[in-house]
Length: 198
Image (tube, rainbow, N blue to C red):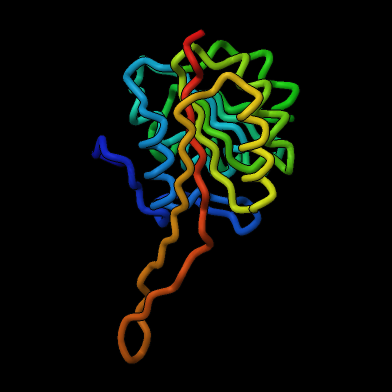
C-alpha cells in the first residue's frame, strides 16, 4: 500500500470518519521525526484516533518492533483497525480503554506519542515517564494553549531533558474556479523530549 520508508502518507489514503480526529499529514511527519525511531523498538500511540500515527510509526520500527495504540472511543478503535488492515500493518496492538488505566499494563517503551486525551494529558504524561526507557523519546501534539501550558509545567517536574517546542502552521492548496488558493489549517504545537539517563 505504502512503499516508502519516509513518513508523509497523504491524508486521503487513510480511512476517515468525521467524528474521529486524524493527525494531519505534515504535522504527523514532524511528530514521527521527533520520535527518532529505530527498527525493533516499542512505541505507544495514546489517543490514536484514526491510527495515522500508528501506521507511520509501524513503517519506522519495522516488523520486529511493536506498537500499542490506545483510545477511549470505540469509533476510533474501529477506524484504527481499518487503517492498519488497509496498510497491511500487523505489529500494532489496538486497545480500547482509558489510557490512565491501560498504560500500566504495557511493556516499557522506547517512544511514546500522545495525541487526543480528553484533557488528561498531564496525568498521562506522568504515567508515561515511568514506562519510558532511559533515553526514550516522548512526543506530544497539542492544539490548545492550555494543554501546552499544562504539559510544560508537568515536564519541569519530571525526568525529561532536551525539551523542544515546535509549532507547525500549514496551508494546503485548493483549486477554485479561477485558480488555486491556500487554506490555512489549525496550528499544531509539538512538544518533544528525552527521558534523562539518571
